[in-house]
Image (cartoon, rainbow, N blue to C red; front, side):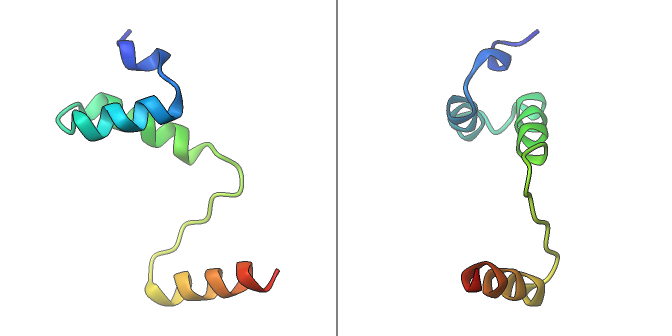
Amino acid sequence: MSDYLNLSEKELREYVKANPQDEEAFQYFLSIIRAKPGRVVVSTDEQLEAELKKRLAS
């Protein structure tokens, strides 16, 4: 087990930024981000624009 597993999300983000070669830590960070509820994935600028308009109208 690596030390980054005990970091807060904010600390882990900083660790990943400071250690871009640590692929394992990066993948762990991505798994945390992907597990958050309400996550929206867009593939195009048009999808992004539509999602932003929808959220701003709410």
